[in-house]
Amino acid sequence: MRPNYSDKMVSDFLELGLSTEILNAVAELGFEKPTPVQATVIPKLLVEDRDIVCLAQTGTGKTAAFGLPALEYLDLENPATQVLVLCPTRELCRQISQDLGNYSKYRNGIRIVSVYGGAGIQGQIKELKNGAHIIVATPGRLLDLLKREAADISGISTLILDEADEMLNMGFKDELDAILEQAPEGRRSLLFSATLPKEVERIARSYMKDPEIVTVGQRNAGSENVEHFYYLIREEDRYAALKRIADYNPDIYAIVFCKTREETQKIADALQRDGYDADALHGDLSQAQRDHVMGRFKRKALHMLVATDVAARGIDVSNLSHVINYNLPQEIELYTHRSGRTGRADKNGVSIAIINQREKGKIRRIEDVIKKKFTRLPVPGAREICERQLSHLITEINNAEVRNDIYAFMPTINEMWGSLPKEELVKKMLSYEFNRFFDYYRKAKDLNIPEKEKKEKSKTEAAGGADRKGQQPSSGKKDRNTRDGNPGECEKGFVWLRLNLGYKNKVIPRDIISIMKACGIGKKSVGKIEIFNEFLYVAMKDSVADYARSQLNGATFDRRRLSASLLEK
Ligand code: AMP
Image 1 (cartoon, protein in one colour):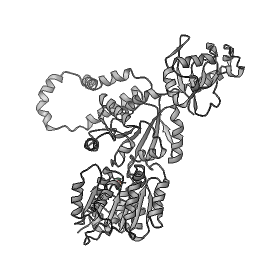
Image 2 (tube, rainbow, N blue to C red):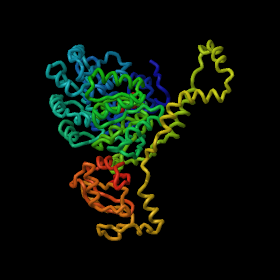
Image 3 (cartoon, rainbow, N blue to C red):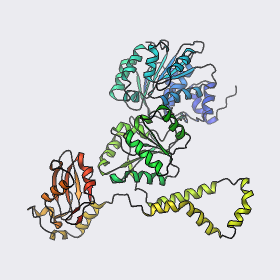
Image 4 (cartoon, helix red, strand yellow):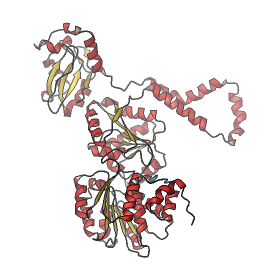
């Protein structure tokens, strides 16, 4: 058979020592050169004999890294199961089997069976009976099949644990232990994980033989080709900011991560109501509903998939334009997993976080872990969005294919439009498409948080402390606080809330307590108070701070409309 791989590929993939059949299949998939994880792991697996723990992000080409050598080693004369791949989700199971099937296209007679929960067990038992050189399984279902003696792993020579950290996160610890206890001694084990938490280390220590730890890319690093951005907004503008991001990116193809199932559904419903191609993916959906949503997303009938972290595990979509953190995850490690869903293979990816003032600290902590900086972007305004949408539409019109079918209608078109000057026609067509959009954005407010503190500070400084002549504190506070400035440290577990009231409004601490009380906030939730001339800071208990801000905004004191904002910690 004449190899059909390209010259460029030969120089790279051939050096790895793979057979022609495998190389041909890989070439057909359009893989031109090995990804770093493939270039590192494949030669080790083909030449050396050690167990390997490989720390690599999702989407780095891990499946081929373990799959290609595993396929090379198969003895097709032997019908027994020789390779076992364990992974966390049904979706990943299917994806891995499909990938292995593609890689082994030119090696006839290889049987690959995938078994996972949420699907009928009888069909899987039947498939296993027909023989399985390779089993790709989720731990729970495999254990069930082992107990029923429908699967036999006593003859495996290679055991692969894919996304080991995810399997443990999903609570498969006991199942993994039970399966690993049963795996034969003489096997070779490979473990892939994006991170190396203690539980993964324990698995490696207990069930692997002196494993070599290989880190591809930086440990815990965000994918190399992912850029990280954040939008700073007021809490109440979170959803509006998401819509702006979607409108500003007309070709968006994104996963929007939310914290809870309820929120996921709420945001997906709202997006649908507002005319976006979006749907929800979370654990309250049946498997059939999830398959339906995933099918639509993969076909790009959906442009935004609103998902929880758990539901999004194992989703293999390699060409996402964005990952959007509608909320930052509770655990920083989850951010790594989320952002790793974009920027796969050689593509560039964008990970966006929508955050409020109080979440800025979390951004810094993520930066420390992923060893990359976030860039703050201004939330796009009406003009930028309309301009982007218009040029997108014009580009689409320019790229439209003019088919012969249109000529039959030209007489009617000419009759109705013939006398209209070109410029008028263009204006009318674009207005037809855009008037609704213009109407919506005409009323749109600026969602960016103004750098008020800074401005006010410099204004006061420029005035050479002219504000000193403001009303003196009736509470007897010293002169130093009559000059506007920044507050000191507040109590642990509290955050500063800034109010547009100060000595010049004759406000005293007792007034603040009364204002809070009127908003339903008790004394215990209020800490230190620092009053300046134009404004004041009141320390609020973390747990009620957001609520306090929302209650105070728009409330009145002495006929003055209040404006409240929370300070970054
Ligand atoms: P994986 O990490 O195995 O899920 O792979 C992520 C994506 O990268 C999949 O869509 C693969 O098809 C693709 N891929 C894997 N290896 C290569 C390669 N050498 N060149 C280009 N794409 C690849």
